[in-house]
Amino acid sequence: MYVVSVLMTGIVVGMLAGLMTRAATGSSAFGTLLYDVFVAIAGAFTARWIVTRFDVAVPVPGQQGAIVVALIGGTGLTLLFRLLRPNSRMLW
Image (cartoon, rainbow, N blue to C red; front, side, top):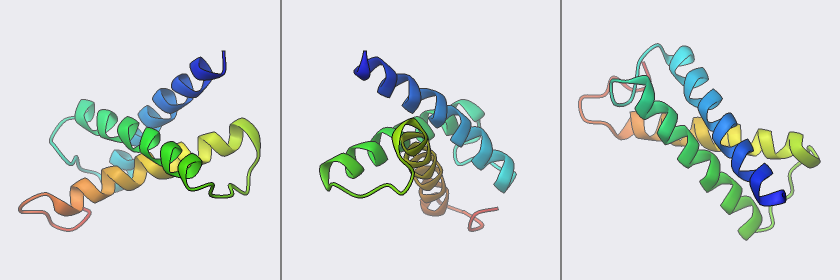
């Protein structure tokens, strides 16, 4: 049951991170919302892996902490891809 909860949290929060990042910057890293959502989901899972692998303390306990970590990871990876994109005008 725990694994399903972690997967659903990563997917849902990654989708929200993709939407929020696109809304905040007003453009897309790859041109479509679908790619932004996929990148944000990958970022959410990557952040979760980093936190558990390196035993990083999350200031918010429980499910809320997992949501915060996923949101930071999803937004961070999406912004990193935008920064590395050719012909990028920084983040906007």
